[in-house]
Length: 168
Ligand code: ADP
Image 1 (tube, protein in one colour):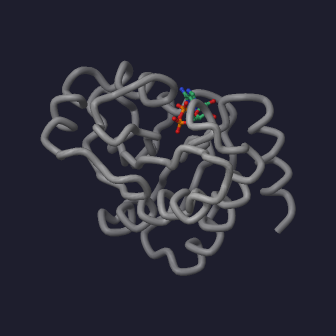
Image 2 (cartoon, rainbow, N blue to C red; image 1 turned 120 degrees about the vertical axis):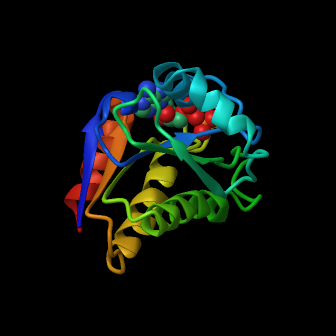
């Protein structure tokens, strides 16, 4: 199992699934969510409308439509309220539930954005520690998954993940 970072746009990745930092409605939004819906085309929204939304920390899968990625796993990150509202557990659940869904579908590669660290305000370093820890732990028991990519869109995230992935 390989864990690596990719500095750039998650919508350009040729992987079995990219993860979307979605809103509870699953009906699109700004940030990475907007970018994914724009690149996937309107059929993605049509499929999302059939899913009945998604709770914070949970994950649902759709096809990738016009994306190079075969699937989109939609997960809803926690909004940062200062750290005492279960944010860490909920963020860990986003990663874990997405990975479990990928395994259930026998996917080989998955790419995550830095969930909750944009508009939802989660401190980037703290979020990255959770992301890497959950993925490293999961890697030990993974069967179909061969590669987990951390898609880092801003320079700060790139340097945080570079450091975290260097010390193992
Ligand atoms: P949230 O609401 O979960 O905070 P955002 O979309 O606002 O979600 O931000 C989550 C992260 O996604 C941020 O680190 C942002 O820089 C990043 N991001 C935005 N656009 C893209 C993209 N096209 N590819 C990868 N990451 C992106």
